[in-house]
Image 1 (cartoon, rainbow, N blue to C red):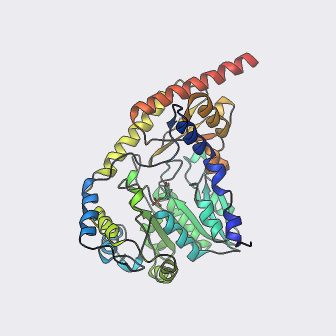
Image 2: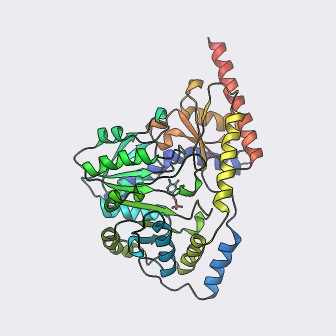
Image 3: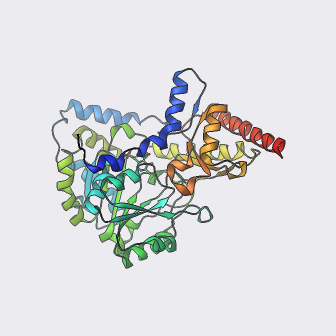
Length: 396
Ligand SMILES: Cc1ncc(COP(=O)(O)O)c(C=O)c1O
């Protein structure tokens, strides 16, 4: 049978990236003592008031069809949220989606196609390649350099631009690096985008999880308003990824055009989820403050716990739920170190190569496990690093 080319473009995208995670799950199933630090799912409970609101809404019959843009209450709540950042925002700038991932997919489908190119920083979040490739567009990577704290620099962006370039996909705060772009860096990136007439799609799903520095966004700059689209959700801010509640906010022309694309794919977001999201956005909920405190403290715990580990250098994040380790000093790539760590010590982490070429000497550790598991993981990483050092000495 014949299939459309999208199935070829997306084939094998996931398999290599997640091979170690899947192997770890298998080992766990077979009874091995595995500390799983691969995926980034918040380990905080959803605030009970959100669950109560979803239940109230279901009991009130809020399970009928919605509309393509979003339920009025959640559109109002989102307009109010973004109005605080740019006063001209109205509900006409908002479209609701089941999560940031769907928003990214539909937004990209509305902006690019075969023959176009999308610029994105490397390292990059694991699904971006699939989102870009599914449209038929080409992905062009812009190196995010360690010496700049993995924050995209305007000169690097400008160097990567080709005549086909249509969109810059930004992610701040960034997964996997935990980097937060500064207002000055965003202004410089914005100038390049104005000069080359590029759209900016900004994934801000970790907006509420900044623990060092200040969150800034191209969306907040009126000069960039006509070309910037934000995508985000309550997955991280409210520790609620399974509710699948996200959105895109951008120019009204864009959201009006995209509405038809969105409606072709979805009959809107479930009304009871929309009510719960409106509640989450309009009431003071402590979850993100607790996550900021917990994840920054766990990152610090890893920095201290690995202070004496041979050849392993933690890169403290400014935001998010992950910390990177540079393992170049051990003489291994991130991929080699991560597999040795799993096979020899039973600790599962993501090899940096899952996030792009620039991350090949890195591993990513998720901060979403209790302190005791973090401490034990540090002991096991140190034990492996020490063994690597002894083996090297013997060979020398
Ligand atoms: C950078 C980034 N964007 C998007 C997502 C997906 O978020 P959502 O659950 O809102 O689809 C994630 C999830 O880990 C992420 O890290």
